Structures are given as structure tokens and as C-alpha cells.
Image (cartoon, rainbow, N blue to C red):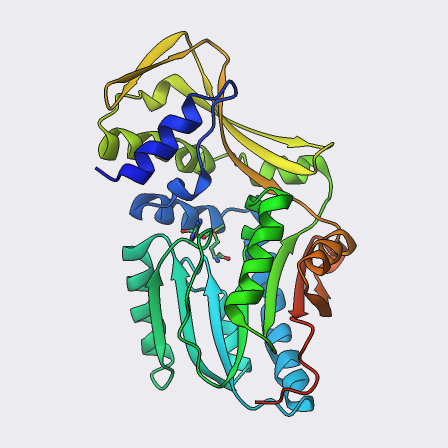
Length: 316
Ligand SMILES: C[S@@+](CC[C@H](N)C(=O)[O-])C[C@H]1O[C@@H](n2cnc3c(N)ncnc32)[C@H](O)[C@@H]1O
């Protein structure tokens, strides 16, 4: 039994507002569900960002050439199926090495093998790991650039996002860059539909965390006794996903009992939305400077290039 997973689950469910860390969505099945979410009409962030990336890649190539940078080592955090890095690699031909980090190890391994078929000359490293923990990367002398697409940064509370950005700046080192996808504040209905689709794929993704707890932690959740809920919390600027108990019930996890009242929820994920200027401010508090900004039509999604702020005299 994975004791860290067990401790996190028990600690989260002992809180007055029960919660589970969203990183545990991503077992092999959870990663498959996420790929299905990306295919949904309602889930605009995936295709909107993907459409921006060929232009982003082209402009990055010109930007780095202008700075006399000839080699980039790219590090993707939460790499998933590696769909987003393809347009970047196609355009940004100065990438000398690519490292993909994800918590979902088997899924990442398969995606990396596929990527290696498309880019046979590129050294690719697939690293199973948790980006909320300190990371040590083997860096070469090419300029490091982090890549954090998918608005995954929005899954952190702002304080944790700040910590992630600070740590990434240290991990990537001086003279580094970070390319980030950020989902923006917008019409409430459009936001809620994206996280509560009509074919219930997101509901299956959300409930998969219970199935995983049953399988890995000797628990007896009945996922059918919980209902998927996604609401936009306007005040905090975040989509909240919950699992709401349909009835009064008791669940056993590794010998400990948890009571659920009818209507009580487990808070499973936040997705914070940022105005680009708001995000820029957050990044700046972590020591990053915004270099470029790409906005999708109607400003529904933003991609930003940040620099670590000490890049001027460092062509590599
Ligand atoms: C919202 S998905 C984005 C996937 C992909 N980057 C995209 O843009 O389509 C989040 C990804 O981050 C990974 N992930 C979530 N929490 C993580 C953690 N703490 N450490 C490493 N990877 C994590 C998940 O497995 C998943 O692949």
C-alpha cells in the first residue's frame, strides 16, 4: 500500500470540509479520462491552447535567435500525453533535449515512446515525479526552458502557485525561461460547462479517484452514491469540483470509518482562472518577468513566456 497516498487521503477526509488532492486523479485510467476530456466540445482550454502553439513556437524561435541563444533544453511539467509539446518542437528547432515530468508514469512512458518516433534525433527523458516536491534536473549547458501548459498551474491555490513558480525558477536556474498556459476569467456558463460536460466524462474522471482509493487503499466507496459537481466560485475566481454524497453513508478506508451526510461534499479540485495581468503579477512575485504574451480570440486563454530576470548577458 502506498503510505503517502493513504496519509493524504486520511488527512483530507478528516477535515471538516472533506477534500482530496487532485494529483491522485491521475492513475492510468485517470490519464485516459483526461485525454477524453480534451476531446470534448465543452472543454475549450485544450484545443484553444493547442491552436495557439504553432505561432508561439515560431515566435519563440525568432525571439531566442535575436538573443543569440542557439540551444534550448525543454522541461515539461505535468506532460500528460505530450500533445502540446509537438507544435513547439516542430517550430522551435533549437531544442537540444527534452525532459517530460508527470506523476502518471505508465501513461508518460507510452506517450514518450510515441514522441520519440516523431522526433527520432531528439534526446527525450521521461521522468515519473511529483512537481509539488523539490526536483533535481540534469541540466546541460543549453538554455533551460520550463513548459507548463494545460492551465495546470490553476490547480494550485495562489500561494502554492507562487511556491511552484519560485521552486521552478531555482530548479531551472539563472538565465532560464518558462512557457505557461493560463486559463482566463470569462463567462460563468462557459467555465462551468467545461467542467461538467453533457456526456459525463468529467464526472467519470472525478469519481475515478474513489475507485482508485478502493483499489489501492482497501476502501469501500460506492462511486454511484456520489454525484459530480462543478461550480464557478466568482469571489475566488476558481472552478471547484466536488463529489456530493447522495445519501447518509459510511465508508471504510484501511480500517478507519468516515461518515457522509446526504449533500455533504468532498472537494476534489480547484481550477483558478486569472486575468493575464493578475497572473503576471503572481509570476513577478516569484521573480519571473513576463517577456511575451499570446492571447486566444476573445482572450479566452493566454500563453506567456517568462524569464528568470537575469537573462540579458547569458546567450548559450
Ligand atoms: C490538466 S492535465 C494537463 C496535461 C497536458 N499538460 C495538457 O496540457 O494537455 C495535468 C497533468 O499533470 C499531471 N500531474 C498532476 N499533478 C501532478 C504532480 N503533482 N506532479 C506531476 N504531474 C502531475 C497529470 O498526470 C496530468 O498529465
